Image (tube, rainbow, N blue to C red; front, side, top):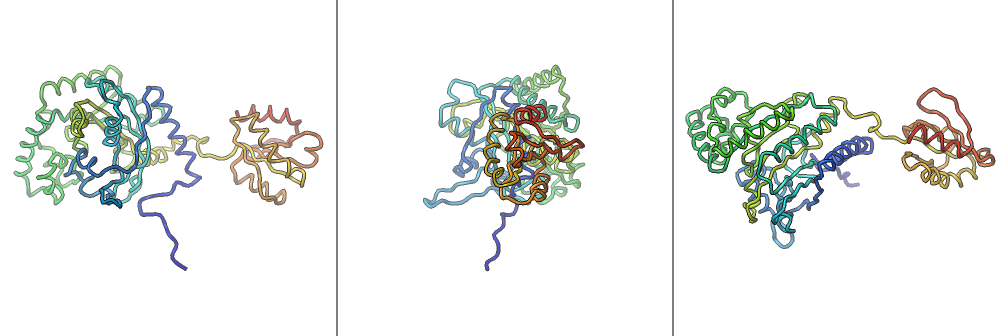
Length: 426
């Protein structure tokens, strides 16, 4: 017999015992973006490779090392999306969403990067992203950040995350800064690790994001981008900070924050935590005013962020913030004793679901003794067992047996049983 086929490394199954927690998180996310009137957009998971090479940057780690790229049967180079902002821009341009209008959009779905799997970081991972287009001022930057701040409050984790801010300025200002940064790193080349020496000629700003402790002192003395900002970018950044101050959102200026993708300009931000060890970024984003033009459209300002859901779920688990009701399980389990009861149980289950749309009800299937059915009811996580036997059918009643808490078993007329379930579970 051949070996069993297993899942690809770093691409994980979501099993039924965990799906209720994910559904809880997804409901929280959907309700939040709905309150801000952001509209959902869904793009394919496969795009032309050129889309990501042009937008993310040929010299980034994502394009150089991490993309899942292949040729299709026509010889066209395709890539599983490593991120979704470029795909959203492509879709918005293709369908005319950016012509003389503003857009507030969001997406949620799987992304793919070939990197070493670790806890909370996988080769297939899921993100929610927020995108806003057509608005150049710092007010929309602030709204995006305030939306993310509200999410942390909504999930009960606001005290465990910190907002870090920086500004990358315009491409012209950043190019001048890049020259001074390269000169500084060249003077300290002996301190640079192998990866940073490679980046020195391809993407020197990413060296600032190095976590190598041997380079920490050298990096602390590096020129700061904030000192090289153009006047318009400096004013934009000051207005953003003033708006956040007025809204009561605390933040820390991090002059080494650059983000990993080439399309960012002006505002960049991250929400970080110390609860997950060294992998501390929970949410990252910023402004990308040149991206639409870079992909062939008319100049259109854009700003947004993305959250890795595996990382966020890991944080919620670590902080024990998944509510008990989000761990799944039925409210009630209907079991049947006797031939007549078995014939009527499925129909009774439908009647209960009609009367109580919010009731989570599991109806026993497969026969078995009373003892075995009670065991199944217990394993379902239900709070009560609903027992339908020959006597109950004859009298038009239903017996309710508590499974989790102290309480007496009771037999009620069917309408009274429905009313009791309504009070308990809906």
